[in-house]
Image (cartoon, rainbow, N blue to C red; front, side, top):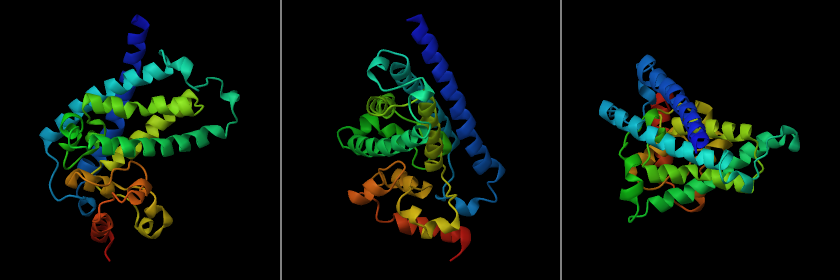
Length: 255
């Protein structure tokens, strides 16, 4: 029991440091140091309230603890023997590491889309998901701002991944890092995609900060995490998304 507590505490502290370093750097750069130069990139006109930021941080710390417990259960705890996690990097070809990382993101996006739609159900929303949606104008600090139950649901994707994919612990670490970086971008409150992105094939595939910001404002639609395909396939993408994206980019770059 003592060993479990120590390992959970270690994972928690590592995740907290990651949260404050990455979310904090994004906040300082965009909201403080470059705020005057990035005014045209801001998605919503309203300013982010300081009280809202402290609320986001408080909930994120609780969520991080829930995620740490889930990670321990899968990587070192009672579920480890049932997973496909391997420690010897030579057990699989080296090319499997980036491939398994890519597959993890695809599986996570599918998991998140359907889980996200579930917790938007009218009988569940106010008990589980309302905490996250209190950030109507989210900041980077909102990336992990979940109710404890939602945090457990979010973290459960690691269990799914470890049961269906052979994963090296390093791949799991990379997955959590990439996932968090994308999550911070989704809650940035500013659009930073380059001008060429709008007319590339990637615009039809990848979500943007505008995409998720619109979900926070309107509460319905745009349920995907990394990619647009589930929203487009299930016709849940908000009809104003492309117009909203173009509005922000036109303000940044002109017509």
